[in-house]
Length: 133
Picture: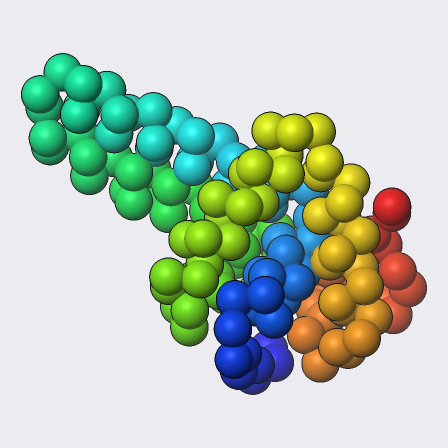
């Protein structure tokens, strides 16, 4: 697995973050975990049950991290950039809510073309481009 690159700001980080979520299945699991975790946390806030706030990271990471290991064959970006990763996840979910998942595929494809050291067998099998735009 490639070394995690360094970034000077979030705008540089976001294409890398999306590339680490190059497969639609990974993004969908992130979407499900984030939306479900946020929903349960909001219910906790609205009903005065603060223990439900713990649902956000537990459900969110509980669905997202296995997707990285099993689908993407990489490590979660949150291990190296936790705050930017949360922001990236929320931005990625925003793209998906607006029906712009195809744009995420293009961002991932373009980043991986420019950074071959970040490719894995899952996101660039056999050297051929598997990400359709």
